[in-house]
Image (cartoon, rainbow, N blue to C red):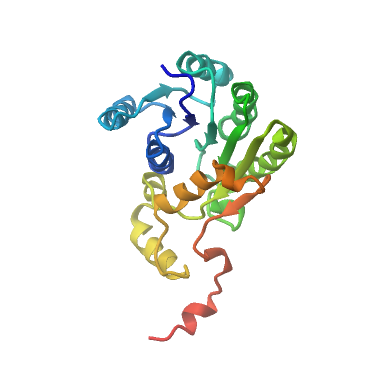
Length: 260
């Protein structure tokens, strides 16, 4: 395997936003290393799809909620490539419950995936970026406004945003850029499952409160992540960029006063 080929590692890279980001990097001929938790059949389908495009793609099963997940993951990553160009921390999972209903294992799992594994994965990734590179995190709309049953995940994502800023300052002298994106609402399999029978009603409303009157596509966010991975973003340091189509600036009066 060529050592000079740029490589991107994406946690949660075989579905949703992670897969959209992988496709963006594939278009620039990066080697792809994608993690997934349990859906082996889907992961192999993704690998096969990229292989038909002559893109080197590796799918690694890993449960980031486990104590030794980072060590096991990076043992496999180093067997594929000695260097990384980009690390994208995208995987997340939680129990959608009110805070008063949470058990200790819910808290432990959520924080291990979103916070603990980010710190430990970056510790492993940095030595693989001797010539600089980029680290990008994916936050969520629940850090900007109250979303039912999202209190635990929101607190973890808020921690992720702060860690993004601190890592950016610690790693800037090494030439490693660290930033994040907050994509607000994305219509993915997980959000469809979360919304259930309210899905159509919710997405219709959410489309109305963007400046362009539509929902974000996965590519809308993936292109921003691609930009943050590039040298063109070199003067953006420790920022979590809101990619929301203007939704966080929306006022309910806009719907009331909307012209027919």
